[in-house]
Length: 272
Length: 305
Ligand SMILES: Cc1cc2nc3c(=O)[nH]c(=O)nc-3n(C[C@H](O)[C@H](O)[C@H](O)COP(=O)(O)OP(=O)(O)OC[C@H]3O[C@@H](n4cnc5c(N)ncnc54)[C@H](O)[C@@H]3O)c2cc1C
Ligand SMILES: Cc1cc2nc3c(=O)[nH]c(=O)nc-3n(C[C@H](O)[C@H](O)[C@H](O)COP(=O)(O)O)c2cc1C
Ligand code: FES
Image (cartoon, rainbow over all chains, first blue to last red):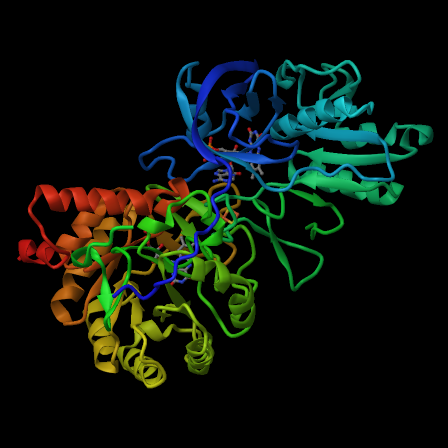
């Protein structure tokens, strides 16, 4: 006897896991690549800040899926892309994929950047592996009629990737060694922004933790709303394992980066 | 759905629609995998550990990949008994899979509270008792390390439910056969075997363990041989059925568990990379059984001795 007799059908959502075809995979800076994947119609359209996980290897190494942020979505071409840093076993394998190969993807997942109702001057800050989502955000906001300011930081010129930006996007590159653009990090550049340019501004940021923390503190001091996309190691990427939980200012609550995040209002998170 | 009774794991006359479960803590409360997994081929969903009160769990980072597996330090993070009943049971009742609640606590009374409350809740097939969690009364040591305590807690819960009661064994003991037989003596209907192994990784930069609480639970393909040896040993020590868990990432691994003496299996961290793993294991094992003239789950056991 099967203990459940009545079976009400459960829901089946839109296609979220599939083998995506690699259309292109090119080096865009030193050890940085952009991979373009075919995004079939039944799959949901990704928004800036949302993530996709790749199961790179069906065997054991690497064992876990790896999360990445979308860097672009082209609806008419049905293409998405991810900008990634080749740094370990999974990204090494991804960088060896050629057009025509397939990649097991789950996505889009997670919570995207949310345009605030009462501000219309986007200040988008990114760097390193956080470049993809802010570039996507900049192009997306441009299609909404806004004129985003995109501030990207790198250690040196060689790490600055080739980007496709809409004309409405105003790009400001910062390098630690001054080899390209502003000499200094993005936080130092933010200090140079004029008061008039902060009118009606809102901040979206993605990048290394110290950078996010500095951007959060600057936004707080300036009274600007700030959303950040954060990282934590993920196992399931779908909200089931609680592995990606991070602490919030409310000691009774933790949030899952893969589900409630990766984008959070920076005031919600506990900064350490 | 065509359910073959010979391949349905059954306790106390209550059958799963199959023999492949998804392991506690690796499938959330099932809804997370809605649209990613086919529940008609998942025999049972073992929920994340449920405690009387909600728990936050351990500080981050909670996961680290290891050669052939992963360490986790989630702790007993869960929504708590009442929220579980209110928010999670609805979906669980709608899927065909049997629902097994993984019960945990810091005190023996916590386990009793959870079972007592759930006795009145519709749609629960049975309980899996997680005896690997640190127990406050026993100096933070888990009940699972002491066969006397295992027998006691099993007997206490046995007195409170007529539903299937499964004790989940910890491999972090001298002789897992002793805890298994203690569970049997206490009145368990089955044992599941194994929970994670204690493990550590150290960061060369900080020269500290990677996980904030130093150690975590090792799972994944790396533990398959440990799990198989445990299933082999336990299934020869006790008369009650053994549910094999540990290291399953392909149907072939599940076949090994069954041949070692398991009557059902659970897939755990393998679902993270492949949410359809349970279905694939279900199909693969059935195909293997067909081509090897094995007519039931019990037929696997004749082969191993
Ligand atoms: C929400 C989110 C968005 C991300 N977006 C991007 C992106 O757009 N571009 C990009 O290059 N990288 C991104 N990452 C980081 C990316 O996941 C890691 O670079 C990748 O996992 C490295 O894998 P590896 O095997 O090459 O390197 P490894 O040597 O295995 O790991 C290198 C580092 O990557 C991180 N990492 C490893 N495994 C995981 C995991 N399972 N989950 C999360 N992080 C892990 C850890 O910080 C680790 O120290 C993102 C991470 C998160 C959480
Ligand atoms: C992230 C994670 C969380 C887990 N949480 C629990 C839990 O709450 N209760 C429990 O009994 N086992 C828990 N486990 C153990 C698994 O149920 C399983 O016994 C173990 O992972 C071995 O199986 P595997 O190698 O297939 O992953 C957890 C495992 C993982 C990886
Ligand atoms: S990665 Fe599993 S809950 Fe977020």
